[in-house]
Image 1 (cartoon, rainbow, N blue to C red):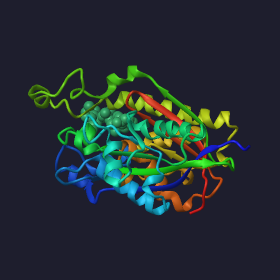
Image 2 (cartoon, rainbow, N blue to C red):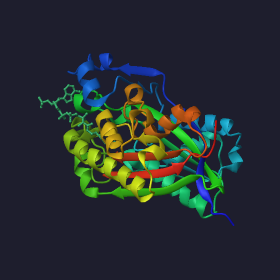
Image 3 (cartoon, rainbow, N blue to C red):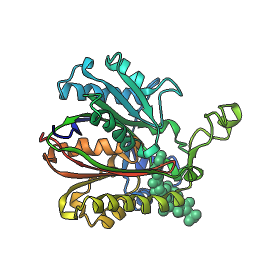
Image 4 (cartoon, rainbow, N blue to C red):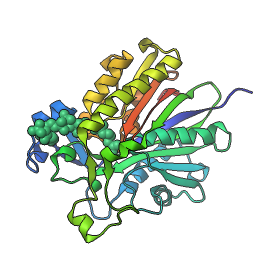
Length: 331
Ligand code: ACO
C-alpha cells in the first residue's frame, strides 16, 4: 500500500473591503508613507468594519467559498481548525462559530494559538489526522482581525497589522504529493517581547487595564525583528538542507508577511530569487494567521502539480517553523 500524505486540495481567502492606506495612517499618528514603506514594505492594509463583525465572519466567508470551489458538502468535513490570536470571544472556539455559520454540525473543531506561526502549526496538526487515516477532509482556517487589538495611537504597531483570512482543504494523497516535512519550534522566553498584557487569567479585564491600554498588542519591535530574521531564515535553510533541495528545486517560498526586510533575509539565506517569493505585504500588511493562506490563494493559478513549496513563519511565543510540501493540483 502506498504511503498516505496530506495534501492541500483547495484554497480560498477573504479580505475586507476597507483599505487603510499609509497616507490615512499618517493623519492618525506621527508617521509617513516613506517611513512605513522603507522599514516594512507595507503600503496599505484591510480593515474589517461593522458592528459585531469578528474573525469568524472572515473565516466563514473563506470556508463558504472553499466548499463551493472544491464541491464539498458540509457533511463531509471531519475537522476544522482555526488558527487565530483574535478569536471572536475567549470561548467558545472561533472554529465552532465558523462551523455553525457555515452549517458544519458534528465535526471536531478547535482553535490553535501560535501567533503568526499558527497557520503552519495548524497545518502540521491537521496533517497528523490525515496521515493516520483517521480523517479524510480537514479545513484549516488562518485569520485575524488584528484591528481589534491594535492601538491606533501607537505608531510602532498600528502601521504593521491588517485584517484577513484564508482557508485550505487538506485531504489524503497517495501519489506522494502534499506535506513532505516540517520543522516547528518555540521559545516561551520570547513572550516578554511580544504579547497582549491584559484580558487573560493573569490580568483579567478591568477599568484599570482598559485605561492603561493593556488590551492591545505590545511589541518590542527591534528585539522581535532580531529573533525573526535569524530564526525564520535558519529554519527555512534547515528544511531545504535536510531534504537535499537546492534553490533551483524550489518553485516558491511562502513567507509569513511581517516585514519585507525579514522576507528578503529569508530568501537570501535560501538563495532563492525574488521571482520565487510570494509577497503581498504591500497590500495587506501583517494579517498574522492570514498571511500564508492569503499568499497561496493569490498565487494559486501559478502553482503546478509537483511544485516544491516552502512555507515559513515566525511569531509571538516565540514560535517559528517551516513546512516543505509538494503542490498537489493544477488549477
Ligand atoms: N513612523 C515613524 N517613525 C517610527 C515609526 C513609525 N510608524 N515606528 C517607530 N518609529 C521610530 C522610532 O520611534 C525610532 O525613533 P528613534 O530612533 O528616534 O527612537 C525609529 O523609528 C526606529 O524605531 P525601531 O523600532 O528601531 O524601527 P525598526 O526599524 O525596528 O522597525 C518594526 C520597527 C517595523 C516594528 C520592526 O522592528 C519589525 O518589523 N519587527 C518585527 C515584527 C515581527 O516580525 N513580528 C512578529 C510577528 S507579529 C505576531 O506574531 C503577532
